[in-house]
Length: 178
Image (cartoon, rainbow, N blue to C red; front, side, top):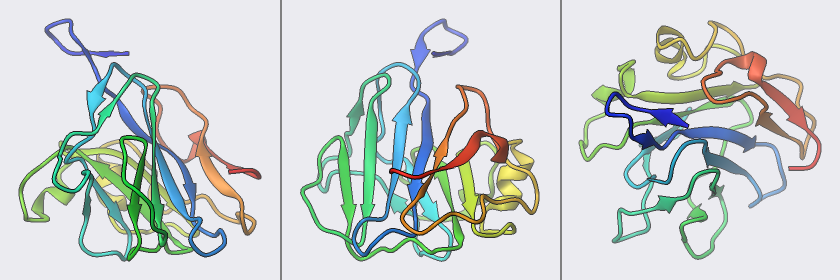
């Protein structure tokens, strides 16, 4: 559990699984809260090659309460009912070579914060290095230049296998059953 200077526990949202090469309508990114209960609302997710960034919300509600160790699955290219555990973006698809970057909550319309090492929370790249937002992830100490999880079999996903406070390609592995 992360603790701030005041001693209070805080949420710790992380990217933990990416299925980018599944059958149509099955691609997804899973987030987990490795810290104390928190609000995922208005956090921003940037997918390489997909504009604009996605602001995570439940339509009119910007509150997505996630308990400690709680998971949220973000579904791409499929429809469903948004809830605090599942968010659907039917018009967005995940590229077979790309990256995902999670940023702090913001109500700013500008993308200028997407280059700030103070705003990035997590990053993962697949298929090939040099993906969008890699330089910011490298500057923040979350990734290594030119690296990505590669050679992932069709229908398999990549999964974060590290612990809180660990970042980078060494913490990611292919798994056969997403």
